[in-house]
Amino acid sequence: MTRVAIVYYSSTGTNRAIAEEVAEGARSAGAEVRVLKVAETAPDAAIDANPAWRAFVDATKDDPQPTHDDLQWADAIVFGSPTRYGNVAAQLKAFMDTTGPLWGQGLLADKVYSGFTSAQNAHGGQEATLLALYNTIYHFGGIIVPPGYTDPSIFASGGNPYGVSVTADGPDAPGQADRDHARYLGRRVAEVAARAVPVAATV
Image (cartoon, rainbow, N blue to C red; front, side, top):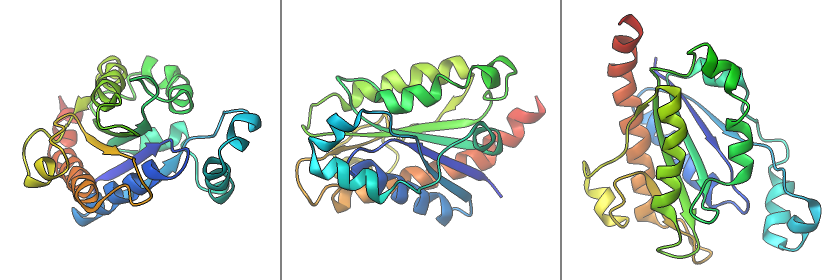
């Protein structure tokens, strides 16, 4: 059974919703899935200034967090982050920056990777965030599996070939088209990993 870890950061819940849809897609392809939220590192003063942020932090305080063991366990890893000035959120980046010991042993190479993101505006940095995320994967020696234009759900959700991206401009986000895209990405990642990872491991 292919093993997929979904490692994400979310401040108010949009990216958590995407993570769950990606997980559902991966499970539909027969994968074993772990959904893991990185630790919140923002100061309480910043969190308390946004009631939705505080409510989400409190509601998810007991959610499982990723460890290095989870990354080693996984055949495929899907990272998720809201945009922060066209880049990965500091909370996710802080976790990724702890993976040096795994990287140094080559333990993050030859796995399948992909990503998802969100921003308040339609052109709020989603593509830049995904491309910035993938810079780390290049260093891992990972196999990046973007959605490309391989399914109608990509066009319906806005046509981002780099990964799932959501415009979080209201309480209904992510919408159904975004959810369909996320499920497709999860299924695609699991299916490609089932083919690619055993081959890569024997080279």
